[in-house]
Image (tube, rainbow, N blue to C red; front, side, top):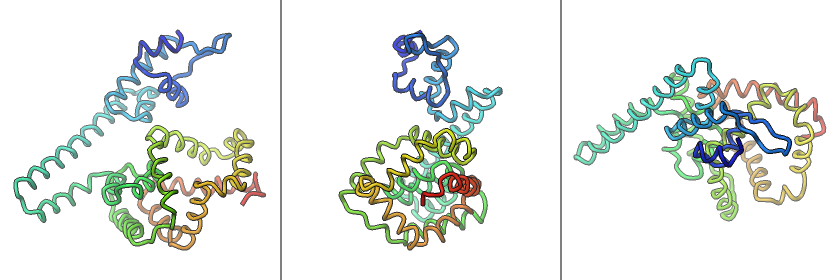
Length: 288
């Protein structure tokens, strides 16, 4: 079956189907003319994807469900997460109602503190830092911030990060470039961020294979980053500012160690990144 028929049957767009193919949820064959042929199994998977997305599951959750030998168990995990999110939302609504009824704001705040303990680190950060600042930070560390804080050490690390982000003078970036960056953040949907994160994960989990597969692209990219075109672009200028910011602000000495204490998954990523960096420098010793 061809792509147009599949779109009609599943209700999905071509772009969505392309994306799910890229995420290896489906793997259609190609005919002699180079057109994709979708079999019954792939169409059924796409129907499931369409239903799951309508029910609010993320692409990573869907992939786990479809690929698992225990799909019912994975779905049950999704149900529990949804129930938790709904309970949290309901509790917030109840607190708003109490506030509108004139309940003392100090008592409401005490309940909010307890409620925050159940929220993910990401949710807490976005509440504290709304707008570009919060979104920029969360988009970079998103997958390490999905869990709630569970230990006193994590809570202390969270406070260190909040204090650092709140007290540090932000890097000096022109209004024009900030405007461009703010617009660019709209491009970074959860799916696009997840795609980039997947490739980053591949590069550190098996750096030798990643370097073998993408050696040409890596060299071209590194050469581009040293070009006048890149250095004079808005993104190039921001990266230079951020490098200086990392060295002088305490980002490398305060923020990153706190992130490692805050998020066990980030600590694991950090250690793998060190190993991947060694492999990269061995392969490309001429790059800075």
